[in-house]
Length: 342
Ligand code: ADP
Ligand code: MG
Image 1: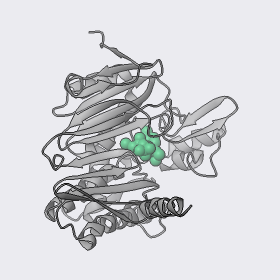
Image 2: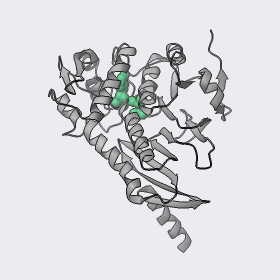
Image 3: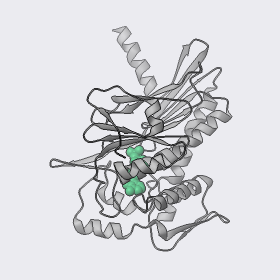
Image 4: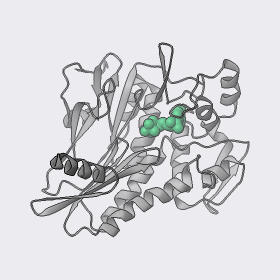
């Protein structure tokens, strides 16, 4: 009985506290908590890791969340959504800048002014519902990334027609990059940053070997993988139909929405994982490419340097861009590797 209690207490500590586990000549320091609407976990492998400095990583996450969340009343994004043309902090500026870039390259399939539609559906919140056709038409009229511009000289955002921002498709990636920079600055050069399944590794493993990161099986419980990628310092971000969805009748409505139809993006994809250097690119691109679908998305990623992708279709087929083919190993027998037709 006593033993069980001890195990239980240790588990509880893991859930919202610090764990230390001495392995060979380095110490693993890990902490996880709920931030950015998801479970956030940072793990550092090092020597003499100061708990205080380590915890600074979570302060970074909290600060950026307070600035860019559309659900925080006083965040910069909330002020913008109320129509105020404010001067932006560096974080908000950079996220909007990159968000606008991906809105442009996807010709609006990805659009950071999608908030009216996201709010209407409420997927992932307790108010989730399938909206009426009229409500959807009203909401999509308000979406248009071209109604904002950034002024590099003043760091100000200019709003030409009322819009509402939702940076949810890209902010986590930026946060991961900032945490990575912080850890490296403070000599924590071997780490894994996990923001609800969005992974960014720092350095190699402490013994110099590569990391092995599982790719989620989109049809199974969270944590079940369909394969593994072997990587050095890289970001691995997945967008999929399983992340957050609403079930009504026998239909599932997931959380990546098409700004043109107003409904969840419908194509052959169940998920797409992006492997890139910066996590802001991985996060942005996972949503962009999911919206594009397999064929357009595949060509788009093949055209980018140092970015690769793993596409998983609803038929359990796995398509790999050329770089992904070298680092991905399929481990689940229900899935089949396929070649893209030329
Ligand atoms: P997750 O947040 O689950 O990691 P994504 O990175 O794919 O997944 O982002 C999905 C989120 O992005 C949605 O919850 C919503 O806030 C926002 N979003 C949904 N559709 C779009 C879209 N077409 N363009 C830009 N952002 C979107
Ligand atoms: Mg994304």
